[in-house]
Length: 455
Ligand code: SAM
Ligand code: SF4
Image 1 (tube, rainbow, N blue to C red):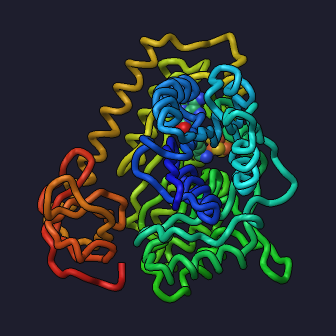
Image 2 (image 1 turned 180 degrees about the vertical axis):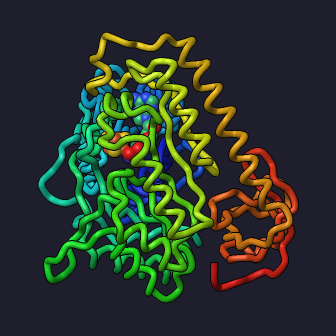
């Protein structure tokens, strides 16, 4: 009989991808995915440390799981609870100390060892283990030990090409939780892409914390850039759409910019975080570029692909941010014009350089005001961008059922969510859709022709 595995995923797309791979690793042990934690044999919380109060949220979830563990034990079973991801990496043994109901804690670089950890946790006397902790940055490459992707990911699939980061932005935990930059070999990526396409994917999103820093080796030992990798992937039969995320402005090289001009399947949407429009703050953040350099990169990208839609990340209230610095961010946003964006109030992450700064801390109320002003500007830009599509015919990859019966939801080439009345049989296909209405963060339209094979 198969065992029930419930994975709760927090945070970014890399975590979504990692969760799918954890399920792949556990499948040979008889674990099958369950939709809820009730009655599960194993629950994994795959955590993210980037957001505020991430660790506290994990502890409260662990508290809630205690009741389910007790119910499972009363029924004569056992629910193994594991904490994975970046909170696990950062907190380590502290999790086991604060939440004794946790059996396993493992970081993002060790989940290929999960079967061994599960065996150790299950062998523990009295059904309660002393706890298995594995937050190494091991010398062996995780990807060499993972099984081929088993679970089909659907029409739109993720493919991790790069992990980790050496940029050390002042505010960010990623270099500490995900480790140094590592690029997967070209052959492995091409093989995984072929498997995804054979399994029904038509869109692939290349993932990496610093995806455009990709520098993987080919079989002859030559190093490929992301631009070159994109050109090779674009040749694969069946691939209609290609995307990549997340990029750093410093790594937008000529070849990658030219790929936006030359490669038709590369979608006209780019998430390129800038964080601030003030050179002083960009320097304090250790971003290693100026606001004008960002403007120039965007100018070159738009020259290569005039319909390119841009997205970004912003932080308000980094230590030292004055009102003039914040105005410079608003000016950058006004100059560039974003199709969508994520914006956050700065919050200190233990162990990062910015967290140690005692000078220039921005008051919470000021951060709130700045965030509200920035978000209003960004929301206006997003709505104006979306309104420009009313009456336009676009291509939508129909990915999932909508909230209303008979409705499907998909993505436009520019990453807008599009709601459309369509038969369930159209799921997973590219459809021509006439946009009828723009809403705050999505579009709705009418299906014109059901299936198209080009984006
Ligand atoms: N690698 C990407 C880059 O270079 O921008 C982003 C990685 S991070 C996982 C995603 C976003 O979270 C960042 O771009 C930043 O805006 C936000 N973020 C990270 N640390 C933060 C902090 N301490 N406070 C507020 N926002 C933060
Ligand atoms: Fe974090 Fe991105 Fe900076 Fe790396 S480049 S340290 S992942 S914000």
